[in-house]
Length: 510
Image (cartoon, rainbow, N blue to C red; front, side, top):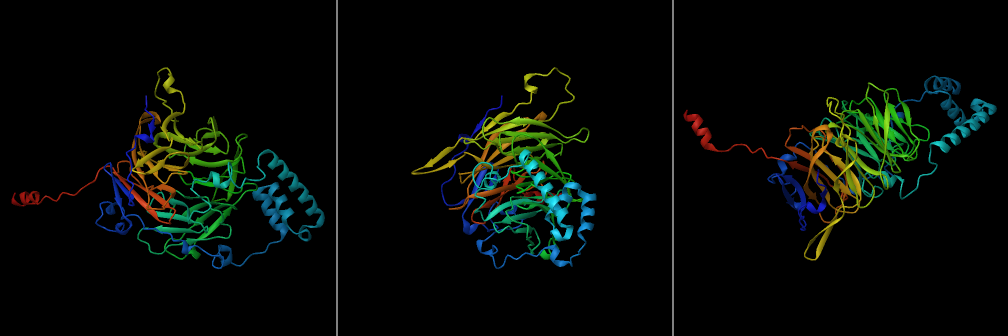
């Protein structure tokens, strides 16, 4: 029986003004701000492959300097007749889109009678779709609002809104409060800045796997897919806007591990969109129950897709190629699923937005070679593995609180370390995990607690993706409220080169 881990099992953290900078061979390393860039620090050699990133508030765009340059500005427009465009839309997207385009056109272009008919038909279509599937107005705060579902702490006022590592190289995308995206690459001094007139209220970004230069962006207008020319000026990069009626604002995007499909979701829409970006077409996957969708997650093998609704329902889709896509429906006792992530071997971890939170494990892998009779242990049930009840660590007259409601949770690609970001605590908890057969977690152990400098709060986290399972080093990247982006190395065992000169003497003598 797996023992449930509690935050009380962690060692008491340090209360001085130094920040936590590394976790090497189960030992925490601290450093003050003045010596952070010192190459003689024991953690510095683990950071040389990652780009240095720091965002200052004075580099954010002001209203006078925020004019955007889009790809459309670089080419002369082609003006087709309205009926030629209607015929093209009819062939590509069907009757519903023809009605929408006709209703949005000027009456003189399509005749007054045709415009009158189209506006009435569009009103009927919107009424029917909104009445069945769509939430008319999103709350500005509280449950179901954009601020509530995004996995960034203090998203509205945060200097850094989200970060994302490229899956195949040391390239980091950073979204700032002015909705601009900066691309930092190791060894490349030029930092491309991506900006678009439709790029407002960015909630999530995702690099396309098996493709070096494509980035999907979830924003208020829909999904922007950027093709980026790294090392050149931002004007050479261009974006395509994917949008669907009543599928706004988009709060989350994620690519299939093979890079061929893109999933987007919105808390105002019960459908998640499966996009074929090469065709610029989306297919809605619609299920009744649960309201709008908060976020989705692909498993590393691509055979499962997790989707969380704004209520207590979540679904795990089986996306295997042998059968049609189908979903298993689950519920949580209270609240909604706030965070979820897949590990190796189809291991799913999730937690609700209640306070205190509990992380559950749900094994999804089938043992197709086991011919024994099924037992109780073979039943798919969610098992509690980590209790995140708030714990106070005290020192003299000072104390710090760790735990509570979760904002974000990330699992490193090897499945050995789980990082947890809380809503009110200034500390990040890192937990050691071990996965056994049939995707079951067989061990959880306390790792470390990470803190920043005085006044800093963690806003978002992401593990470096290009990591081998047999590697001794895992890197967690943390964005702090000050604009500092920290690469936090977790080292299981240091590889120290042999420096004993007697060995070389013996070899030379022989």
